[in-house]
Structures are given as C-alpha cells and as structure tokens.
Image (tube, rainbow, N blue to C red; front, side, top):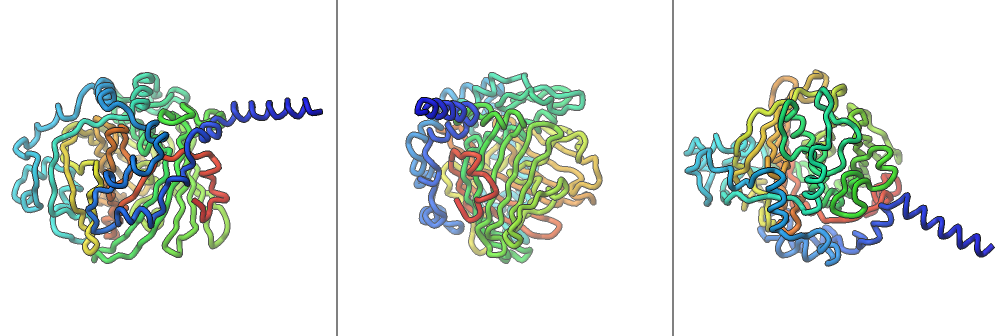
Length: 486
C-alpha cells in the first residue's frame, strides 16, 4: 500500500512537471507580491504631477527587482548592440540627419517650432500639433530638448530567437499568417516584398509581446481624463497582470508556456482590474489573444454590480475602454486581429524616412503640469520610421483608416492616428515609454502617455505608470477569484 502511494506521488510530480511547465518555472522566480510596491510607496518616489525626480535612476529596476531576477533580465550591452544591428542591418544614428539637418541637438521652445517650417516637415504631425500653450487637449509641449539619436536593441535572448527564426514565418497568398510557422522572435526584422506592410504589422502584432519584459509583468497606472476646457473629469487607477503564452524568450518556460497554449494556439493573456473611481472599482477585464488568423481574441468582463462575468462579442472591441480615449482594439497599443474576413484592411507603406518624435526616457524625469496637463522635461529624437496606412474595407468598422508611425530599428510604434468613417481625425495615441539599456528593453515605466478623442474633444493621460517584470501562473490571470486582489 505504501509503495503504491509513493509510486502515485512520484507519478503526480512527473505529470505536473511535464504538463504544467509554467507552474514549475514560476517557482524559480520570486513571487511578484514580495517586491512590487504599493501605489502609495511608489508615489513617495515619484508623484503623478509636478514631480521632475528621475525615478528610473532613484527608484527603478535595480532598486526594486530582486537581484536574482535582475541578473536574469540584464545582459552585455555590447553583445546586444552588435547582434541587433546585424539582424536589422543598420544602426539608427547612421541613417538619420538627412531631413532638416540644420536642426541640431539642443534646447528649443514652441516658438522655435513656429518660426522654422523645417520642424513641421521633420515632426510626426501629432507631435507638431502639440507644440504651444495648452489648448483643448492635455499633453501640450512648450519647451523640449532634442537629443542625439540612440541605437536601440532588444534583450539578448529576444534577439537570438529573432535571428534563429528569421525567414520561418510564412504568409499566405493574401499576406496573412500561416498557422504553425511562427516560433518566436520578431518575424520580419527586415520587411520586404509584396506584403511588406503586412510584415511590418506582424512585427507589431506579435512583436508587442516582447515589450514589458516579454509581457511577463505587473503594471500600475493612474488615468486622468480632461474635457475640452482642460478640467479633470476622470481620475482612476488600475493594475494589470500579464503572461505571454507563446514565443517566450526571456523567462522560462521558453517557447510555449505550456501544452495547453501550444495546442490551442494562445499568444498572451492579461487581466485589467479597476481600483477607482468608485463606479468602476472591482471591474475586471480579461483578454486572451490567439495566433490563428480566424481565432479572435476572447474578452471577458466581470461587472461587480451584476456579480457576473460577461463575454464580449466581436463588435464590443470597438467600444471605448472605461475612462479612456481608446477602444478595446487599441488596448496594449494594438489588439486588433489582422484578418482577411472580419474588418479586413488594405495595407500600404506610405513612407520610409526619419521623423522627430518623443524619445523614450532613461531616467523618468518627465512630468505633467498639474494645472494645465502640459508635458514637461520632454526630449525628442530623430528616428528612422515606416509610415503605414491601414484602410478599412468594412464600412461598419469604427475607423475608416489608421496611420501608424513605426520605428524601423526597434520595430515599436510611436504614434497612431485613427480616422472615422467621415474621414475626420478621431483618436490619436502617443506611446513613448521607458528605455532600459542594460536590459535591452522598452517598458511602460517613467513616461506619461497620451490618448486624444478629437471628435468628442476629450483627452486622457496615463500619468507615471510603472511596469515591473513579474512571473505569473495562469491562476494569477484568471478573471474569477481576482476581484479586489493583487
């Protein structure tokens, strides 16, 4: 009898190790709740408004994350720089400076922009329109510094996976993903050919899983909304727990998270929980994305007033996210499925050229004026970019076309402009982030982000978010049982 019990125990451990590698790997890392600060603790080091302290230097990755995890996600910068330049074929500092070369690194004001037409040619349009005193939207910029262009690169394991799998991902005769052909990494680090625009978009669709420490992270944000008179009409906090389920490169398990993720073709999953304001507190959203072209994202919402979990339909993804000037298809920068059947697009690369854009922060000294919502301590940088246009083929979709400014070197997108079915500029989103050179990582930490609804004349800023690497299990991102818990 004892022998049988021992045998069954060993068998159970073996099955657990084989079938649930995500659970096993999670035990190798410290539990996130043991080091993630509370919002009140974080605000002792950096407040949401009127606080120019360089939080990423004084209370950043090295100060918060346990040493064993920090050592796991940092690498030799020289190796990362060399390998990524080999993968994409250039270094950004070598290919910029051709447009308006007379505009040099240095400090400027919005008056310099108004008095020099070259700035309009060089800047991303949304950025150019933000130059000047506050008007009807927050995020205005009155002073800024242009810094020399930097070389960006990705964490060594992400770069190695990208190099290893280069050329493996296939597109069908219409330019859409052939299921089972992506094994991780950025699928098209050098886009080219007939479906170049779609290749760029797949770098966004799949490559966004590599920001925020391969999307294994905890995110805390404060969202503040303003009406056209720059009066605050929304102030809320939320947190997000994220798990990448495919293409994992940075933290074990590598590749697929577990056998279920591989069998079903799951890409990633997260929960978004609202803590305030009162009418949203306790509401939880769970999003699961899939790899297959016809496998659409599953959106579940827990509504406290009903004590029920609601499954959202495909068209619900066009609804605005509570308290924000974004729709669900805009969440996480980009969440819309690239599909030939449901809301298909015509894909075009309009331009390949340098633009002046907001630089990712390395110190987190950027801040927001508490009275006007103006952004301060902003730095700009010349970046080589693709300008991609997505023209919607279905007139029932909320946007008629979308313009995306995408970095050619790090393949991250800087800005998006969405136009409604009447051709009016509808929503814009500017997404600068934190840059961690020792990790080869872009993360939403230390930099305010801005979303604007130009039709309803409303704007929202993500004020001083922090995003920490965190290894979670599936249980951590379940919608059931997570209400009110971190």
